[in-house]
Length: 218
Length: 208
Image 1 (cartoon, helix red, strand yellow):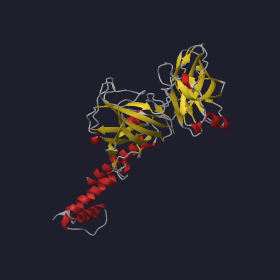
Image 2 (spheres, chains in turn green, red; image 1 turned 120 degrees about the horizontal axis):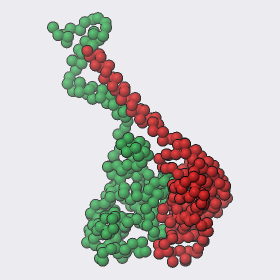
Image 3 (cartoon, helix red, strand yellow; image 1 turned 30 degrees about the vertical axis):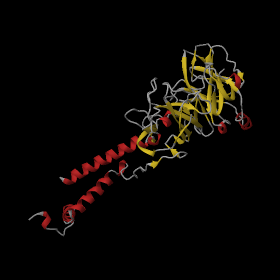
């Protein structure tokens, strides 16, 4: 005789355990697995297991679309290919072009945030990028549209700037294939590994991606 | 044997839950410890344990001309606020790091690095040093702004028990309204042992 064969009509821990075992034993394997999964989810509840998963909807990128990347609202106003962007910057190699993204950013937080967060939130594919000869490589050179001066600093709360992000570009680049991707940040209040609190961390999942029209100017 | 095992498992889960709550909900690092604030008004000395500091002047501008004359003048996204400071170390030379502005809502504004103005100031024992901090701030936050500066790291609040100067810049609402519309331009200044006289310039001189 085994415990599974007999359910004793007595009270006490042993009897309850027997009833539970009997009840479980009569369930099908899929039911058992489902219950085990539910129990595991409940066990992770103290660690945030029941919190909603972040949405991961990647929107198609469009000009004029305001995107909340975390520290900033970011809007790509237009993209153009130009031969020169004087007095801000000129191509280093004769014959190369400049691919310029005109971007508006607004700090909507309550503390100053570094502008480079916005610049680094934008990625590109098939841009035909030609590396700068300085240490920046393929990174865009950034200028304030209002004064043509270089811009790489903290943006105070509530401040809005229109920036020009300039990439050096191979003139043979097929502009219909150029794509951009905008990523977002999540706020990390405590990082036990680096003890560097209250910082923005780039998310792997993009917020918006796609081709936008590139205007050719001479 | 199973009851003790289940109890042990529950105890471990409970301990992990408590640890998670402690590290995420409670301030276990002491980062929120407040600084020792020494308040002052414009043109009034704040006596810190390591330095005497005084905001001697505050004024608005739309443009700043950088120290290198070939560089382009920089335009404020909102309005430039030029804060002139005189600081003297009382015991030993000390670096005052990163002056900030704080508005009536508690928002913190950093000084600008593209302005060409000071972003730190050195102090020398018994010898006044003069510096100008330039802030690009929204035009609607000027009234009630306070300037704060200390020798510690303002970002990570490593100021517990140390002195911090907080100066009311005395900007009234009517002043703020007119300052928001300024079209003035100045030469950017950083720091100097000689008193700094801010030089107003006309736009055709900017960057020339």
